[in-house]
Image (cartoon, rainbow, N blue to C red; front, side, top):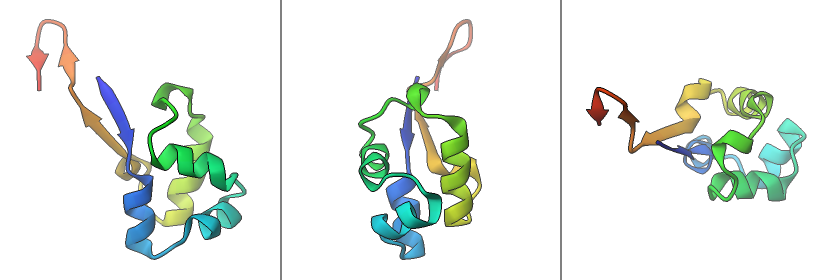
Length: 78
């Protein structure tokens, strides 16, 4: 299974710059950029960070994720 972040897409929908998001969340701008560009694996991201980002952008946390290549043993891929 692959998990990608849709932070940049959602941030741009709200018209918020990366710098502004960093100021609102208190999360380093470079780290946010790495998240947006999927340079950090999803399993290495602290859940609380995603909660803070989702709150700052006024989205549900599930709106910030994109799932792909899901395979469940015994069920198959979808």
